[in-house]
Amino acid sequence: MYELRRLGRVRLTRTMASALVLLVLGGCVQVQPYLAKEITPPTKPVRVLLMPPDIAALEIAAAGVPLPRADWTTQAQDGLIDAVEDTLESHGAEIVRYRSAEGIVPYADEHLEAVALHETVLQTILTYRYSPAQQQLSLPTKPEGLDWTLGESVAPIRADYDADYALFLIYRQATSTTARALLAAASVVLFGFIQPTSQSVGFATLIDLESGAVIWTNLLQGQSLDVNEPDGIYDRGIKLLSGLPL
Image (cartoon, one colour):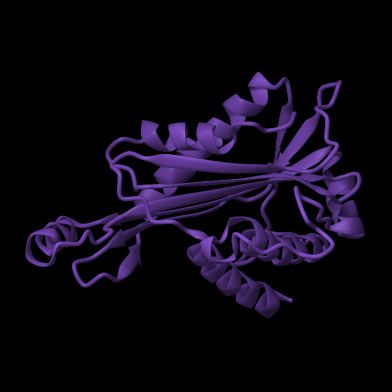
């Protein structure tokens, strides 16, 4: 099961990369939310389970190789979680934190089926709703909006946490070193084109734990942030969660 999840994570990362539109306007940020059909906000306070966020902050060296930065990743995670807490509080919702398991895989065994299915469904949503190369395509049975479900696989999560919804977050940020930025500037002077040096992308998914339905997704993309300005990550998180149907 872990090997299947590891391979699924690799496929998901590749699919996210294919969904990106590289933005070259400084500070430009775009969000693209989708809402399931016939969804109305709840009329009573709800409990939202925040699944373990999948966050990575990378540094792009002069050779163009992205290298993980643990300190930047921690900073990004703190800012995004603060944004989640404030957003849910503004909706009158209660946040529930997932109790990560020990070891490499953060999920309990009984929750792996739902997590793996979420990754598979997310790949399809990214391909048919967000990928620039597939913008004009649609699945015959899903012509518009969102109409995906994780089915009964979410039942163990609902039972263990007594939550109404589960919120999944993915965030990737790649920031260039000074040498890489200078190389990009030189490419404009010497060759007349802009070489992207940094970017960020976030993806949020809200799952109804009663029905298993994917009721809302949002993709955020833009240029990377200055790692010395942690408030920027918080602002990105607020944008990523804008339009949350709670």
